[in-house]
Amino acid sequence: MTPSPIRPARPSDADALSRLDHDTWSTLHAVMPRPLPPFDPFFDADHRPEDYLVADLGDGPVGYVRIGFATRLACNTHVRQVQGLVVAESARGRGLARGLLRAACDEARRRGATRITLRVLGHNKPARALYESEGFAVEGVLPGEFLLGGAYVDDVFMGRALTP
Image 1 (cartoon, one colour):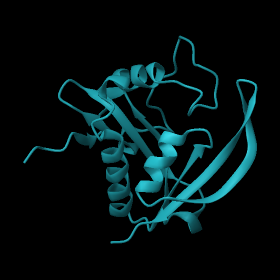
Image 2 (image 1 turned 30 degrees about the horizontal axis):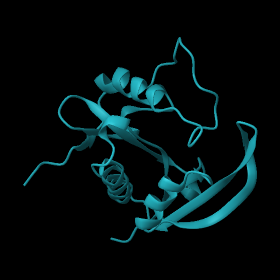
Image 3 (image 1 turned 180 degrees about the vertical axis):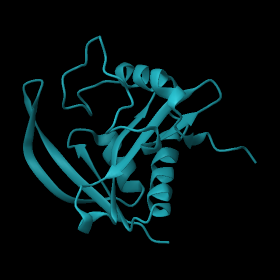
């Protein structure tokens, strides 16, 4: 049996994850302008290594998923949120995004969550198809929420239960 390429992030992954983040930037998924150097540190008080799982095929990270609380409210701690999912162009087509998403659900469940949510841009059809195939359903749409490249884009809220 082949070991899983998914593992917890380590502080030493910061530079590789930062490069990955900048190399994969696209208006397909990003609402912020393309970042320019000098880049902020990848890990900080709000983005800690323990919030990330990485896909590592042996030469360092080629993908990551970030899991966080949906809000800071105590009454909402049973919900986790996917707050980023990235796979390097060179590593796509190997099921890593699906593996990262499944690992995120498993980790959220392990941390006591009973639900997991995410937000995706309406025009990101590949991501939406992946999420739907993994049991996520559209729970809300904010029409025309973002103006990206001269076009209005919907913000789509998706979620699913985390059954044991």
